Image (cartoon, chains in turn yellow, red, brown, blue):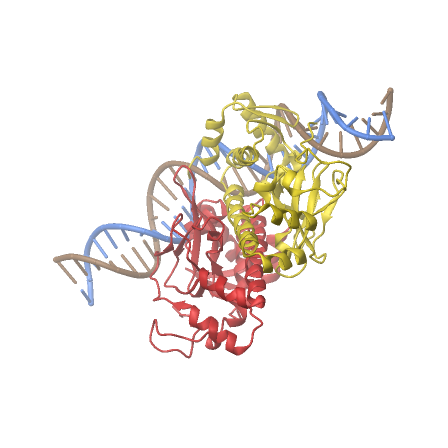
Length: 246
Length: 246
DNA sequence: CGGGTTGTTGAGCAATATCAATCAGGGTGG
DNA sequence: CCACCCTGATTGATATTGCTCAACAACCCG
């Protein structure tokens, strides 16, 4: 369990921390601002105690207050179908944001659950609004965050609507790999944060199929998988499987 | 071809029109503003000539300038996979917005193609930004529009990742029905704006499967379908098929 | 060490894809 | 106006994929 820590220079848990020290600063809030502005932002952001696995960060219909940046760990977003079945709509890695769905109706439209021990930065939205009234650059950045999420959602739609199980799973692995890479983390060797069941739920496949496809990819030497530890042996092939037209 | 016209009181095509007259006013831009503010908005919005079927509203990577509200007709958004295959990520009906993906990178991340003759309102984004600097309520509304789109995208993800072809198709029909209903249009009798091929592309199914499932739903008297004209005979059953757990 | 949970594997079956033929409509040119 | 063609949709036969049910293995946690 290599805990990734994006806040190397901080002290006790929950202690006030500067965003200037956070390795995520130019990723999760890509703000082109002066350093004293960063300080103002720092004072807003709340560092919460890490959540254990399978904890809710928030639940659907709860009043919207904050957006959250995943600092370490992983979460999934879930929505409830009318028949009461839970459906996973995305996985969020360190440096990615959740909660943006809450702005429209002033309550969250999905739930967020941790997949492992996870710590997040909480950013109260009223504060963002107040601050962005004074800082046009921040206002633009907030819009960009939301817009970027829309683009990512479209990527997710194209991922889960691929026609074969192999394509979907390969595409998920490629997506995870690229997102780790964008965060300067190992792109070809990482731990799958979610269970096989969760992968299946997200991709519209059964656990058995997920397991079988992963085994097949392994026997073809495309990946190596030991429990959750993944090594991508042939990224080009994985990508080809994922994108193979049709 | 019953052309839906959301602008009953206007004159020649391309002529300046007031948003106050548009039946979409409280839908596509749900702005809680005074009437003179609506006038200011009206002056910004550009009414373009209707586009014929299969025309691009914009293409991926084009510089982002405007967001667009579909006034009549239907469009699809498409993204290009690395293998050059086109994938449909959504259908947009009258009163729905496209182009929000362009804000983040200042260029569009998908393409938009008309499925039939379609007219749109073009809203230049710099104008929105300028106006919203003076009108806090508008700024909030812009954020809400983006947030709402994120929620809708999550609905789409849950739709296309359903496990059976029947579920996905039923869910798509339910989605269309509800969106027409929200627009005060006939919810149980409407024309499918997209081809079977497009449905299949979006849902990750072959045309043949789409056709077969639709035939089956028809033979079970759940729907009645004549070419593109759809009548939903048993909405409750359709919904049950769509949501049937798993 | 035991029991629960999660993941893997197998066999048979159901759903979907593939390939191919046909049909219906719409548009075009004669 | 009709004959033709082209596209999109339907239907059928067969192959393939993925699901279901079941057994079992591996790990986790007490």
